[in-house]
Length: 212
Image (cartoon, rainbow, N blue to C red; front, side, top):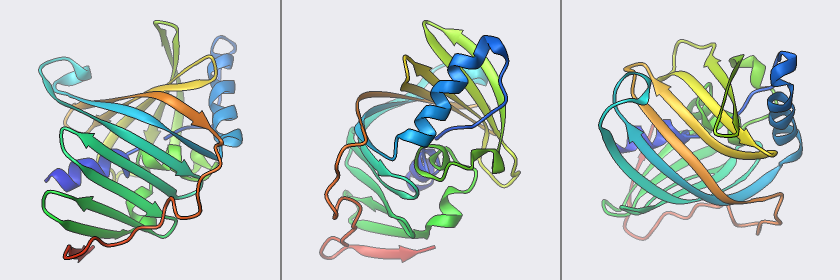
Protein backbone atom coordinates (compact mmCIF):
# COMPACT_ATOMS: atom_id res chain seq x y z
CA UNK A 1 0.00 0.00 0.00
CA UNK A 2 2.82 2.35 0.92
CA UNK A 3 4.45 1.60 -2.46
CA UNK A 4 1.29 2.60 -4.32
CA UNK A 5 0.91 5.87 -2.39
CA UNK A 6 4.52 6.96 -2.87
CA UNK A 7 4.74 5.87 -6.50
CA UNK A 8 1.53 7.60 -7.48
CA UNK A 9 2.51 10.78 -5.63
CA UNK A 10 5.89 11.06 -7.27
CA UNK A 11 5.27 8.93 -10.27
CA UNK A 12 4.71 11.00 -7.69
CA UNK A 13 5.48 14.45 -8.91
CA UNK A 14 4.89 18.21 -12.43
CA UNK A 15 3.56 21.31 -14.90
CA UNK A 16 1.50 22.84 -17.81
CA UNK A 17 1.83 24.98 -20.83
CA UNK A 18 -1.38 26.90 -21.32
CA UNK A 19 -4.00 29.37 -22.29
CA UNK A 20 -4.10 32.29 -19.91
CA UNK A 21 -6.04 35.42 -19.23
CA UNK A 22 -4.19 38.73 -18.96
CA UNK A 23 -4.59 38.67 -15.19
CA UNK A 24 -2.78 35.34 -14.98
CA UNK A 25 -0.16 35.99 -17.65
CA UNK A 26 2.63 36.20 -15.07
CA UNK A 27 1.82 32.76 -13.68
CA UNK A 28 1.67 31.24 -17.13
CA UNK A 29 4.98 32.84 -18.05
CA UNK A 30 6.58 31.41 -14.92
CA UNK A 31 5.33 27.94 -15.77
CA UNK A 32 6.45 28.15 -19.38
CA UNK A 33 9.85 29.39 -18.31
CA UNK A 34 10.23 26.56 -15.82
CA UNK A 35 9.27 23.87 -18.32
CA UNK A 36 11.48 25.15 -21.13
CA UNK A 37 14.52 26.44 -19.26
CA UNK A 38 14.95 24.16 -16.24
CA UNK A 39 16.44 20.96 -17.60
CA UNK A 40 17.96 19.74 -14.33
CA UNK A 41 17.31 20.62 -10.72
CA UNK A 42 17.78 19.43 -7.17
CA UNK A 43 16.40 20.46 -3.84
CA UNK A 44 14.32 19.47 -0.83
CA UNK A 45 10.62 18.76 -0.33
CA UNK A 46 8.06 18.36 2.40
CA UNK A 47 4.98 16.23 1.75
CA UNK A 48 1.84 16.54 3.82
CA UNK A 49 -1.14 14.23 3.50
CA UNK A 50 -4.50 15.93 4.08
CA UNK A 51 -7.89 14.30 4.38
CA UNK A 52 -11.29 15.55 3.34
CA UNK A 53 -12.76 17.44 0.42
CA UNK A 54 -10.62 20.40 -0.59
CA UNK A 55 -7.77 19.33 1.66
CA UNK A 56 -9.69 20.20 4.81
CA UNK A 57 -9.72 17.89 7.74
CA UNK A 58 -7.33 15.81 9.78
CA UNK A 59 -3.76 15.56 8.53
CA UNK A 60 -2.68 12.08 7.53
CA UNK A 61 1.05 12.50 8.08
CA UNK A 62 4.09 14.49 7.01
CA UNK A 63 7.26 13.28 5.33
CA UNK A 64 10.29 14.99 3.81
CA UNK A 65 13.36 14.34 1.73
CA UNK A 66 15.42 15.37 -1.28
CA UNK A 67 15.01 15.24 -5.04
CA UNK A 68 16.93 15.69 -8.28
CA UNK A 69 15.81 15.47 -11.90
CA UNK A 70 17.02 15.67 -15.46
CA UNK A 71 14.21 15.98 -17.96
CA UNK A 72 12.84 13.99 -19.60
CA UNK A 73 12.37 10.96 -17.39
CA UNK A 74 15.36 10.88 -15.05
CA UNK A 75 14.89 11.59 -11.37
CA UNK A 76 15.55 10.60 -7.78
CA UNK A 77 12.97 11.23 -5.09
CA UNK A 78 14.24 10.16 -1.66
CA UNK A 79 12.17 10.14 1.51
CA UNK A 80 14.40 10.52 4.55
CA UNK A 81 11.77 11.16 7.24
CA UNK A 82 9.97 9.44 8.87
CA UNK A 83 11.46 6.44 7.00
CA UNK A 84 13.95 5.87 4.19
CA UNK A 85 12.53 5.13 0.75
CA UNK A 86 13.80 5.88 -2.74
CA UNK A 87 12.06 6.36 -6.07
CA UNK A 88 14.51 6.57 -8.94
CA UNK A 89 14.16 6.57 -12.73
CA UNK A 90 16.88 6.27 -15.37
CA UNK A 91 14.74 7.33 -18.33
CA UNK A 92 13.37 3.85 -19.00
CA UNK A 93 12.63 2.16 -15.67
CA UNK A 94 11.23 3.40 -12.36
CA UNK A 95 12.70 1.74 -9.27
CA UNK A 96 11.03 1.94 -5.87
CA UNK A 97 13.28 0.85 -3.02
CA UNK A 98 11.97 0.28 0.50
CA UNK A 99 14.97 0.11 2.81
CA UNK A 100 13.04 -1.32 5.76
CA UNK A 101 11.74 -4.22 3.67
CA UNK A 102 14.92 -4.43 1.54
CA UNK A 103 12.59 -4.68 -1.46
CA UNK A 104 12.78 -3.19 -4.96
CA UNK A 105 9.82 -2.74 -7.29
CA UNK A 106 10.49 -2.11 -11.00
CA UNK A 107 8.03 -0.48 -13.39
CA UNK A 108 8.30 0.59 -16.99
CA UNK A 109 8.64 4.36 -16.84
CA UNK A 110 6.15 5.12 -19.65
CA UNK A 111 3.42 3.37 -17.71
CA UNK A 112 4.43 4.92 -14.40
CA UNK A 113 4.33 8.55 -15.56
CA UNK A 114 1.51 9.11 -18.05
CA UNK A 115 -0.84 11.76 -16.66
CA UNK A 116 0.69 11.69 -13.20
CA UNK A 117 2.20 14.66 -11.33
CA UNK A 118 5.65 13.27 -12.16
CA UNK A 119 5.02 13.95 -15.84
CA UNK A 120 5.02 17.65 -15.04
CA UNK A 121 8.32 17.87 -13.19
CA UNK A 122 10.22 15.09 -14.87
CA UNK A 123 8.56 14.57 -18.26
CA UNK A 124 8.76 16.31 -21.62
CA UNK A 125 7.53 19.80 -22.45
CA UNK A 126 4.37 18.54 -24.18
CA UNK A 127 2.11 18.90 -21.14
CA UNK A 128 -1.05 19.90 -23.01
CA UNK A 129 -1.06 16.41 -24.53
CA UNK A 130 -1.98 14.90 -21.16
CA UNK A 131 -3.54 17.79 -19.24
CA UNK A 132 -6.24 20.44 -19.56
CA UNK A 133 -5.02 23.73 -18.12
CA UNK A 134 -6.98 26.26 -16.12
CA UNK A 135 -5.88 29.46 -14.37
CA UNK A 136 -6.04 29.44 -10.59
CA UNK A 137 -6.06 31.99 -7.79
CA UNK A 138 -3.21 33.91 -6.16
CA UNK A 139 -2.77 33.01 -2.49
CA UNK A 140 -0.15 34.54 -0.18
CA UNK A 141 1.81 35.81 -3.15
CA UNK A 142 1.86 32.40 -4.85
CA UNK A 143 0.25 32.19 -8.31
CA UNK A 144 -1.49 28.89 -8.95
CA UNK A 145 -2.28 27.00 -12.14
CA UNK A 146 -4.56 24.01 -12.33
CA UNK A 147 -4.19 20.83 -14.41
CA UNK A 148 -6.80 18.17 -15.01
CA UNK A 149 -5.58 14.85 -16.50
CA UNK A 150 -7.22 14.07 -19.84
CA UNK A 151 -6.88 10.35 -19.21
CA UNK A 152 -9.47 8.71 -16.97
CA UNK A 153 -6.94 6.03 -16.07
CA UNK A 154 -5.26 8.02 -13.31
CA UNK A 155 -5.58 8.30 -9.54
CA UNK A 156 -5.61 12.10 -9.64
CA UNK A 157 -8.56 14.35 -10.43
CA UNK A 158 -6.75 17.66 -10.20
CA UNK A 159 -3.20 18.96 -9.83
CA UNK A 160 -2.38 22.52 -8.80
CA UNK A 161 1.05 24.11 -9.17
CA UNK A 162 2.18 27.26 -7.41
CA UNK A 163 4.91 29.70 -8.52
CA UNK A 164 6.40 32.73 -6.84
CA UNK A 165 8.98 35.03 -8.45
CA UNK A 166 9.79 32.40 -11.06
CA UNK A 167 10.34 29.63 -8.51
CA UNK A 168 8.33 26.45 -8.08
CA UNK A 169 6.84 26.73 -4.60
CA UNK A 170 4.30 23.95 -4.19
CA UNK A 171 2.01 21.32 -5.72
CA UNK A 172 -1.40 20.19 -4.51
CA UNK A 173 -2.58 16.77 -5.69
CA UNK A 174 -6.26 15.84 -5.40
CA UNK A 175 -7.18 12.17 -5.79
CA UNK A 176 -10.48 10.59 -6.78
CA UNK A 177 -11.53 10.29 -3.11
CA UNK A 178 -11.13 13.99 -2.35
CA UNK A 179 -7.89 13.56 -0.43
CA UNK A 180 -5.18 16.14 -1.01
CA UNK A 181 -1.39 15.81 -0.89
CA UNK A 182 0.54 19.06 -0.46
CA UNK A 183 4.16 19.20 -1.66
CA UNK A 184 6.29 22.23 -0.81
CA UNK A 185 9.75 22.77 -2.28
CA UNK A 186 12.82 24.51 -0.87
CA UNK A 187 16.54 25.00 -1.52
CA UNK A 188 15.99 24.33 -5.23
CA UNK A 189 18.99 24.68 -7.53
CA UNK A 190 18.17 25.15 -11.20
CA UNK A 191 20.28 23.53 -13.92
CA UNK A 192 23.09 22.23 -11.71
CA UNK A 193 25.72 19.94 -13.19
CA UNK A 194 24.76 16.46 -12.00
CA UNK A 195 27.16 13.48 -11.89
CA UNK A 196 26.65 10.90 -14.63
CA UNK A 197 25.65 8.20 -12.13
CA UNK A 198 23.05 10.34 -10.35
CA UNK A 199 20.14 8.37 -11.82
CA UNK A 200 21.80 4.94 -12.09
CA UNK A 201 20.10 2.49 -9.76
CA UNK A 202 21.97 -0.44 -8.23
CA UNK A 203 19.95 -3.17 -6.53
CA UNK A 204 21.07 -3.38 -2.88
CA UNK A 205 22.65 -6.63 -1.78
CA UNK A 206 20.09 -9.26 -0.85
CA UNK A 207 17.08 -7.17 -1.88
CA UNK A 208 13.98 -8.84 -3.28
CA UNK A 209 13.08 -7.55 -6.76
CA UNK A 210 9.53 -7.45 -8.09
CA UNK A 211 8.73 -6.41 -11.66
CA UNK A 212 5.36 -4.89 -12.59
